Image 1 (cartoon, rainbow, N blue to C red):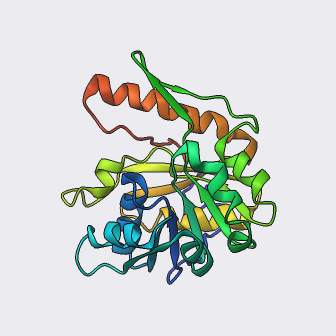
Image 2: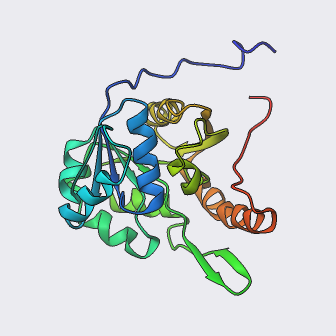
Image 3: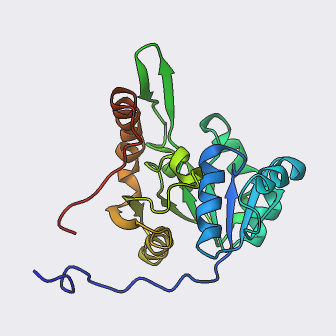
Length: 229
C-alpha cells in the first residue's frame, strides 16, 4: 500500500488559529503553549487569576506570541481550547466555562491518575474518562481527546527541537479530530493519529501510568510511535 493510499483525506490548514490553554500555568499546559507559539500560533494561557497566567507567559521564550488571561477570556477569545487543568479541578473548571466554550473545539489532555508508593495508577471516572466527562459537561462543545502522552519536560526544553512522537486523537466529530490532528502536526516531529471514538479515551488516559513507570525505570521521557500508518 502506498503512502497516498494510507492517507484517506487531507488534514485542514490550521495556520492562524488562536489557541487557549486552560491550566496553562502548569508544566504540561505551559509546554504546549510554548510549542504552539513556536509554530506561529497566537496562544492565550488561562488561569483563575490573570496575573498568574501572565507570569507563566512571561516565563516562556522571549518574543513568542503568548499572553496570559483569566480562564473565561482565554476560553472565549481562542479558536481552539486545550484543557490541561489538574484532574481534581477538571469538572468544576469546565462547568464554570460552559458559555465561553459553546461551539468551540475543546481538546482535553487531562489524565486522571493517582500516585502511591508503588507508582502511578489510573483513577476510575464515572463517565468513563476525563474526555467523556468534558463532553457530558460541555454539551454544546466539540470535545476531542489528545496530547495525553507528551512529556512536559521535553515540551519546555529549549534544547529539544523536535518532538519525536505520535499523538492519539479521539473524538466523535470527524472535522474536529482532523483539525486537532493537524494542530499536532504543527509541532516539528509530532504527528496526530486518529485513535477512535471518544468512548475509547479511557484506556488512552490510563496508559499514561504505564509511560510514567517506563520513564522511572529507564530514566527517559517515553512517548508513542504508531507503525504502518
